[in-house]
Image (cartoon, rainbow, N blue to C red; front, top):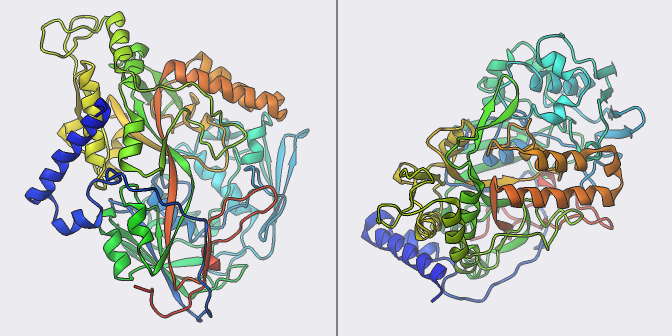
Length: 600
C-alpha cells in the first residue's frame, strides 16, 4: 500500500475504533457508510435536473434541511453575516441582482436596470416599481446608498469594507470621519443610484464595489452601526425584499418563513421551513421523509447510498468553493484597514511552507473518501471560472523526499535525535494546526495531515489537541489567534472571480495576512484598465497563480463538487449552471410541491 494511503487507513482505523467504543452510536456509523469511499465502490454520477412531474398543490410549505454540523449564528444581513449557513438562510429574504453566464451583471431583470459608463467611471442603477419591502414600502435608491453608509462607517464590524469599496469616490474620507456623506454615491431621485469610482476596472462589471442587495433605510436608520449586527431588526425581525419573510427563529436550529405578499414576482408556496441538520443524521432524515431539499451533502455520504433512496433525486454540480491549508503570516490592522505581514511569524520561512505542501498526499484523500466529488486543486482559482482557471498551473504534488530536502537545506534539522526537527536556530518549535469538526471524515483527514507533516520531521499538533466547532474556529482564525499557525480553509467565490477580495493587502478576508510585491502586481494587472482586453486579464491570472505558488500563503488542496438531494414531491428543480446560450433563473420561489408531505 502507498505510504499516504497507509497513513489514511491507520487514521481511519483509529476513528472507527473510537466509534465502536462508544464515541458515536453504531447506527450513525452504519448510516454514514463508515469509511466513505474507501470500499472502492464505483462512482455514481448525477445530473443537474430533477423532473418528477405531477400536479402542484396550493399553499404548500417547502421544508429544507440545511446540512451543517454547527448551529447558525442568525445574522440575517448580507453585509454582516460571515458564515455560509447564515448566508443560505438570508438568501430566502433577499433579492440580488442577476448575472450573466460569464459572471457580469445583466443589463436588466425583474427589479432593476443597469448601466456601466466606463468613460465617466460610473455604475447607474434604475429601480423598478415592482421592488418592495415586505411591509409594502417601495425599495428606493436611498436603501442602496444606505448600504455604502453602513459598510464605510468607522464602526462597521463586518468584512465588506475592502479595496473595492475604497475605490468609490469619497468613501475613504467618509470612513475616516473627514466627511459626513459619501460624495461618490448619488441618489438623484428615489429610483436612481449612481456610484462613481476612482478607477473603473473590469471587476466592476462583475460587481466589485456594487451593493448587490439593499438595506431598509426607513427600518434601520435609527440603529447605530456598531449595534446593527446584534439588533433584533437583523436577528429576529428583518424586513425582506425577497420571496419569503421570516416569521420565527429558533436560535441556531430553525427558521420559519411565509410568502412575501409584496414580492414583485410569483412565489409558488405559502411558506418555507429551513432547519439545521447534522451530517450524521442526513440519511436517516431522508429515509423518514423529513425534508424536500437537502443542501450541501457532505462528501463522506456515499453516492451509492444516495442513489438507493427511491423517494429522492440527487443532483450534482461544480461548487464555487475550494479547500486549502492556510498559514498565519501576519495580522489585520483595523485602524489602517490593511494586512501587516510579520517577518518573524513562526511560518514566515517560505521553505517551511513549501515543504509542508509537498508532504500532503491530497490524491490519496480524494480517492479514499470522496468518490470523485473532490479533485486535487492546482490553483486558488476554481475551474468553474473557465475563462481564468489554468488546468496546467504548477501545483504541489506529494513528494515527501523533496520536502525533507527543502527542510534540510533551509536549516531545519533534528539536533537531538528525537525524530523531530529543530528550527534553523536550533530551537524546538511546535506548529499548531487548526481544523474544523464535522462529519466522519474530518478527524481522519486532519490526523493524516498531521502525520504526514510528522513524517517529514515537523512537530505539528492539532490546536488544543482536538478539532474545533465551525463558528468558534472561524472566530479564532479571523481574530488572528496567536495560537494558530496553520489552519484549514474553505473559501467560496461569489460572481466576481477577481481574487483581490481574499489576497489584497486591503482585504479583511485575507486570512493568511500576507501580501508581497508579486501578488500585488498580479492583482493590479487583473484590475487595470488594460484588463478590459480579456487576454491581458488572463495574463494577470497566470501571474497570480505563479505568485501564490511561489509564496505559498495558502496550499490549494481540493476542488469540490456540490450535491443536493430533492424529494420527489418537488415537481421540478434545476441546478444546471448557466451558459451563454441558456441562463438558468430557477430559484426557491419556483419550487412546486405535489403532495402534502415529503415522500419517504
